[in-house]
Length: 432
Ligand code: EPU
Image 1 (cartoon, helix red, strand yellow):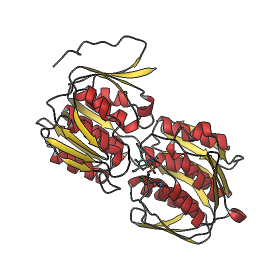
Image 2: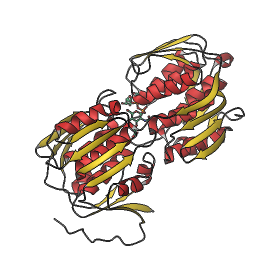
Image 3: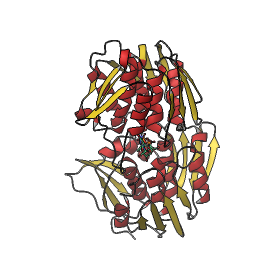
Image 4: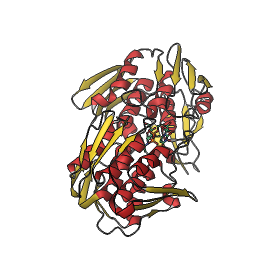
């Protein structure tokens, strides 16, 4: 088993380029099922969740060709299987997108209930409600979702989302693009990846308006044609590097970003005494002075993203004063707190609220990642800490960060991927 070994306490300096957005890629790749012809998709991040989506596409009968490390061509003309097995589906939350895409194009889908990071209860009732509104028959039995479209085609309808849901908004969008007539999604999610999926589908011939607002209108079309599309940069990967610089200190140019998507993160870092400057499609992040306390509440976009909550918590562990983090999306997203406490952090959690009392520094410790973003937050804590931090269960982190070790080394971090059987150097572990 591999682990990360981080010798912390070194400021980060240099440039890092951001990869394509995970949560856009895991929707756009299944959406290739909707297209007649070849989809060439660029800026695809090399992460394990993407590998899994491509494996599922191949299992269904798609031709998948890697053009280079970040470009794939997908042709779904010979789909012969409409079932996503449990062994693949349970490894990833985004497998739910195969329900919407298979149902829309082929009129039937059998998908094992999706897995994903344990962040509390993660139902898909809103997805199912949307499919049913479009005329699908949906049964959940023996851990599988069975969905069929009577007559092989769905019919447009108005779908009101009782709660803002990224996954349900994108899934219903996919289901609606080939349906008869108009679908209106009310109380839709507005995240950048919702807009990216709509842009991808429109570039292949779909008729979607309003993505990025509360109301999305989708007029069904006969078919989509092949084409080329490039995925947007990852808001959360960029935010993670911004938080790393805030925590460890230094001066880093973060390239290939859409600064607008980072506004909420930039605003919070500025409150904490971190300088963030926009330079075209880059942001420069600088921190030399002390970190100040702040309060954060996670909310749907354009609010502060829940997927940056743990990383900001890592930064706030060493900010002067007492900060609060209010988790507004998931029931159970503070499981990393006990790991931070091993490093000397002072955090009290009560339900969905964490109160963080800043300490002068964290001390390196052996840690275990418990989900993707928590794992990234542990890396950030380790980069700033005095001494050596080891992080196990890095497969969680590899689900969503392309070449994390290489990119961090490129900006001066002392981080290695090592085989856990080898003894870990404790050269710095007694510092502080
Ligand atoms: N919800 C329902 N019913 C549903 C769907 C959602 O009650 O049918 C609730 C959830 O329980 C949650 C809230 O609605 O309380 C929002 O969930 P949402 O559907 O927006 O989340 P998701 O689609 O399952 C995506 C991202 C998550 C990210 C959330 C929120 C993907 C593959 N995952 O999940 O990303 O936290 O949106 O922004 O897009 C991550 O990347 O680390 C990650 C967990």
